[in-house]
Length: 97
Image (cartoon, rainbow, N blue to C red; front, top):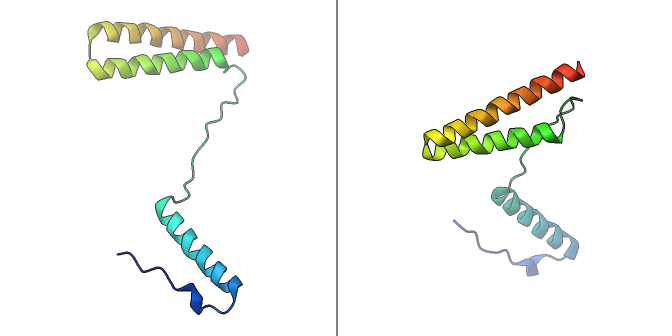
């Protein structure tokens, strides 16, 4: 239930009226859009670069496409991308280590 807007003419001090107004606005904002924590992925491995990231993104995109329509051709394309991605990751790790 919506509370009526307070009558700010009853305040004798403008600073206390402004402070009250700001507090009420912040309470409403916190209810509508609360602050949430989010995790930022950090890939600090030296072997991990943009090429590997692109291959992983393509593989994931093809997997979503396969899951969406469940066609055999999409499964085959996804499978090839998965194999290429895994080979690229393993090859990069072997070179690095």
